[in-house]
Length: 440
Image (cartoon, rainbow, N blue to C red):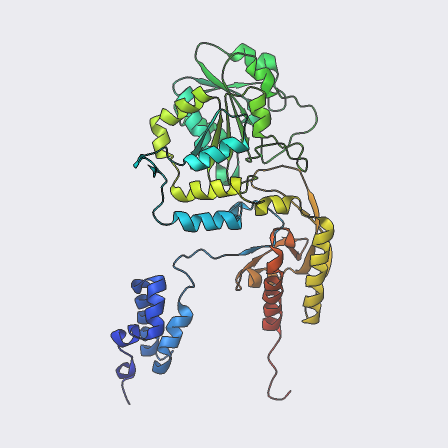
């Protein structure tokens, strides 16, 4: 019997295949070589014909050099943290391409000297929030708050309401973040009610600042009380307001959501927020406020450790200066338009043999934004068993399972991708149909 190992194609001859040469240019030679070695091992084990090695390697290789996969978000949750929160606009994605090479991020082409880093993004941020005297951008929303706490409160007290000592996803707790800076927390009030007198009686020579935090991922109702920013400012100490979601100006569609303009107009020394939430940009922490306090944060040594890269600055500027980002379009999506898209999708699926129905669906902002706000819309309901096959398909379609049904809500799906959702569902339906037997 012939030794199967004699038929294993040589590694160098396989890597010289023009198709694999092109793949190596795209993915890197080590990735392609690893796939070649794995395919050769399958030949040795009798699981793959020797003539099929190159084809098998090509089928096994990823599309890009990253393990991240683009997915279609049909959950109805706009800022889905597990799916990367805000999807970037076309303008922001193009800005990333520009910034991927050498750019004048810290270079003044006129003088040939060093320039202020990210001046274009900071200018755009100040223009979008004119009530702010200056602005600073750091790595994320938590970094913005921790920089403020370090610069203004390390070794001192931060006065904060007990009702605002929040915990967000993955066990992240605000008190832990603040005390990690070396500051001490002075909790005032009760869980449900905090008054101006509670704050006033807590202030003293060790008070660094008063912190006000938007409870972004929950809502308290009933016998409650909170102190507005304007009254806290009247106490005479700097007030740092963490609005969380990144709404820079009032939004009529989200009337209860705090915004930076309102907090600054009320006299806040600093406002911190996230860039990848309702602003619709890249992950970033935004600091807006009075010139002296922003300068104090900018000069602090920690600011260097929290500095953002050129990609973030480019995408943020394009988000601020460019057209409406996808997040905004999803928030204000017309329910009637969503109904028409859902009906069209359902009709196409029925023609393909899928059992489905169009049902009401309430979308949410997510990502800690606008808690309790429900956005009316529509979804296509499928059997819950299809959820796993769809999320493992190509492209992956992520819906939400509710009451033993899989709901595909198109609010966050670009209209031009409706056909991709249709094809993905039909592929699952066809895969579930038993193959005809020889007797049929």
